[in-house]
Length: 416
Image (tube, rainbow, N blue to C red; front, side, top):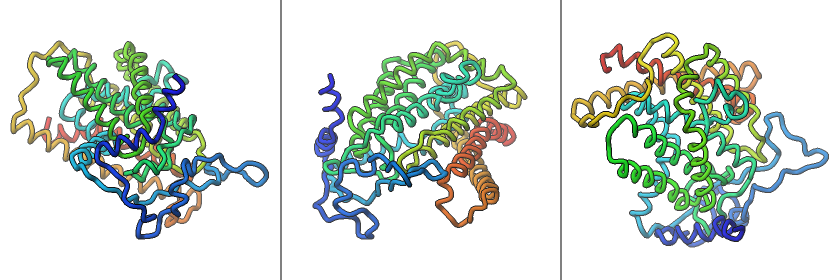
């Protein structure tokens, strides 16, 4: 068994998959023309940047919780594509597991399809770890898959596939560790939660829904191999963790819905616990976007949960209801339905972007002033005491806006 697991973590297996799909490294010409990349030796050193931090006298940690070790430097890696069908298929599939998809798909589901389904997707997509560890009664609806995946990376510290032999097509997350693949976790969670939650609301062939869920999660998983970001073991580990979490939490989904709207203290719990988890996020050997991404996810989940609570407590807009009787036919997709859906989505996204920009700017100004930081210092955003608060405030506001104020605006404009 141990040999099988190690073989699934082999970078050569990822490289063979890339070659089979027509992706090859270009002839060795060193870093990109702009000279911003590392030396050839550094770029080819397996696991560079995943070495332990220096210890001993004088090896203390800075105030922001980051050790004094340089992060792996990403550079533009040249490659040759011999099969553009696989190239565009897997690049598109990779986008289905990224933030852009989720910040558009989840609001679209809430505004245009079914608030009940968006509620269930939020339960399983964003991290529930605080409910498992701290508040098993009051917080189970706001947070699960992503926090567990991100923290597991920092605990295991397994490197991503080595290059060479693997061709890496993405640069932003190259400084993160690999195990498990949070793309695979999120894709599995989204697709199968949507399948499970819609079975008792809409009548459709179950086999068709199952096939769509399998295809969606499989394409996202394979895209992580094609882009060179994960090993086979990373992807399988992410899928397995999500499957276990879904099985363990499924019996409590309905109870979670009721508990979230029952307690008047819910907003306090939802804000305090995720913020403390973000602020005490495991320290990394160097800066990576993992902490920032985790804060964004927890904050958005907290905002969405508070938004649902506001809807229920103040009876502002219609809230997600309990499971309805099976609908015999899914409403036909008409031109009018498409036009209204597009209008609701456009109005909602514009309002969300405005709120995000305004709150982000104000929160940064307050934090810069409080900590006496030069505004033009872009590195200041990475400091723990600035990064976590500004992102948490920003995306909590975005979550509340998406679930409360956008539907109210829709109603005011006559779009509901």
